[in-house]
Amino acid sequence: MSDLLVERDGPVAVVTLNRPERLNAISGPMLEQFSEALAEADGDRDVRAIVITGAGRGFCSGLDLKDATSTGIGSGGGAGLGRFDLRNAPPMVLHRTDKPTLCALNGPAAGYGMDLALGCDIRLASETAKLAAIFTKRSLLPESGGTWLLPRLVGWEKACDIALRGRTLTAQESLELGLVSRVVPSDRCLPETLALAAEIAANAPLAVQATKRMMRLGLDETFEANVHHVFLQLLPLMGSKDFREGLAAFLEKREPKFTGS
Image 1: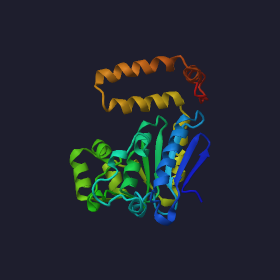
Image 2: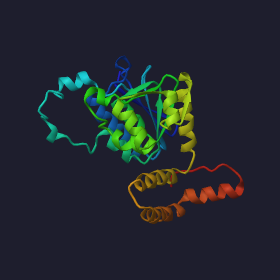
Image 3: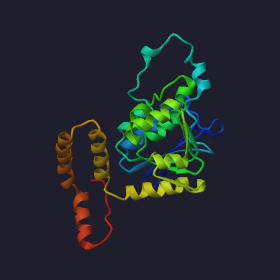
Image 4: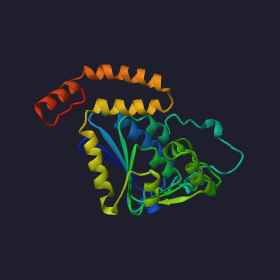
C-alpha cells in the first residue's frame, strides 16, 4: 500500500497519510510525495478544497525518527546542514497553497504532525485527537512552521506555555484555545470535514482563493498595503463569469453554479 493516498471526493482532494502501523510517522520519501500531492491539487482547476487526514487511529506521530537515524540525522556535528533546501518542503508548500486546506484531525498529532495540522486553514478534531508539542522533550524545536503559527493562533504567552513546557493538549483543550474549530465523534471526523470542505467548494473558487491569499499576505503587510492589494485582486474578480453568475443567482433567488472562470 502507498504511504500516501490521494483521492477525490467531488471537488475536494483528500490526502491521507497511510502508515497506520507507525501512527503515520512521516518518512523521507513521504515528504516529497506530500509536497507533490499538495502542489498538484493546488494547480488542478477541478479541485476547490484539500482535506488532509491520517489512516487508522492517529493523524501523524511526527517525523520517522528511525528513518532519520538511518540517514545520519542526529549523528552530531551539524553535517549536511548546508544541503538543506526547504523551498519545496511540505510546510512551505502548504503555506503557499491557495486552495483552502482542512485537517481532519482523526487522532494524535505529535511534533511534525502538530505543525502540519496547524498549517492547515481549518481543523476539525475527533474526540481522541491530541496535539503534542513534544519538541523540547526531544531537544528539538517546532521546525516546520510551529514557531510562526502557534503564537499567531493563540497569542505569545499561551504559545510559550505550550511549546516551552512540551505540553500535550487534548481535543477539548485544543478547542478552548482555538486550535481546532470543533470536536466531533471519532467516526464523524472525516465526514464532517468533507462536508465543510464541500460547503467551501460550492462558493466561487477564484474568490475563495483570492480571499485566502490576501489574508495570508496580510499577516506581513500594513493595513494600507493590504487594502490596496485587495482592491487589485477585486478588479479581475468583478470581470469574471462567476461574478456575473453570482449576481444573476442573487437576483433570481437561486443557488449559483460557479465554474471557476
